Image 1 (cartoon, rainbow, N blue to C red):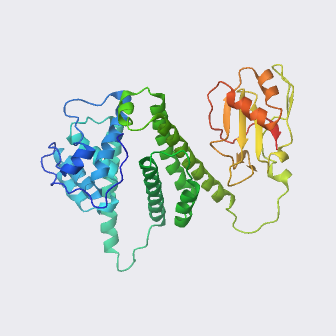
Image 2: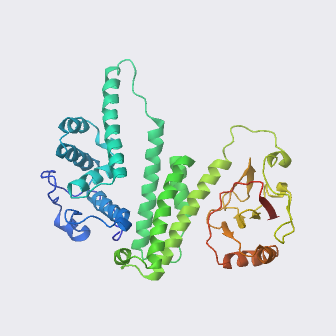
Image 3: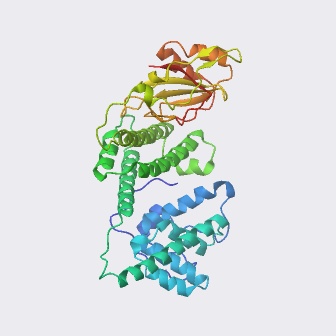
Amino acid sequence: MAKRAKKKATRTKVSAVSGPTKELKIASADAKYFGTEPNFLESQPDSDHRQLDLSKSFTWYSQLFGNKEAKEFIMSYLELNGDKKTAKLVKKVPDSQVRSTYGWLARLTLRGLILEQEEKDRLGSEIDRLLSFVSQEKSSSEDEKESPNKPNIQEIMLERASEAAGEFEGMFDDYIDAGCPKDFNTKDFVLTALQERKILPQHVNNIIKGWEKVKGEFVEVQQDKCEQLRESYKFMSKTQIKNAIKYVESIISDLHGYVSIKQSAKKPRARKAVPVEKVVAKLKYCSAYKQDGLDLVSVSPTKLHGCSEAWVYDTKKRKMHHYVADEYSKVLTVKGTTLLGFDKVESGMKTLRKPQEQIKEMTGSKPAARKYFKNINAVQAIPTGRFNENMIILKAF
């Protein structure tokens, strides 16, 4: 993607969408900065980079157009395919109800893009949704006098989450414009934006997925394996790319922390304190393991509930799980067969090639164990927190 740019307060004025495949006219200043409209009339995107090419195209449209134009693009797409009746119905849909991404996708088909079957299905589902909205609006207008309209709470909360996500993107744009400095603080901004809007945890998870994709793209840039990405990010130095990755990781950590706060604070009423033994009663774990040259004995799961750090070994998959409590929850908690409250960035999971030697190294002091685990030459994954009968609790403190 090209250098991230903030959306302007006033959108670029465009000519009417006439001539389905004709290039859209935009202001010369915008054309100089954003380039001309994406064109697939002469060649199709490479299968390995299709999603990247489409993402760049969507970014181009989103910088210059809004929901109104997205709806017009869908109407043009329908008319070109001989479905003028459906196009007229779509015209009745309020602009705010149109998901602009599908408008961009419809427009790209008019610019020569050949859709894959999955893309066709998604676009068709969006059109069906818009038609369903028109039908519901017609039905509700007939009963308007008897049943006054009530706001849809789910849509309101989703809109708030979308606003918060936009604030984070703007914050990231400012960070890049500032040259990606080494020192930064995202916590206060992220928590304030989420708390003021009372964002639900399930909606935060969708925001996290979006930032995971952003991180993945910057990591790919750092690896310098894709020529297109190298060209797109040539305005950033290696140090700036590295700092940008840390910045995105900080945002992701803050989002996970907010979810942990909401989950731990979900207490409808004050209840009698539950004994730790009862809290961990359903936790599945391996009490002892004497195979493969190992002689391991699990610590009591009661020590796991309320600790700040834990080492857990999966005897079946030979994976070491390292859990570290996040700075919001402060401690790890057990709920059913799952461990909650751990930091998704600081915690990790790696496969051990020589368990006998490696486990011994990780049962010493805290700093030594962390350093040894970090230096293990294996792919690190994010643990899920779920326990089973093959997992033995080595340490909890």
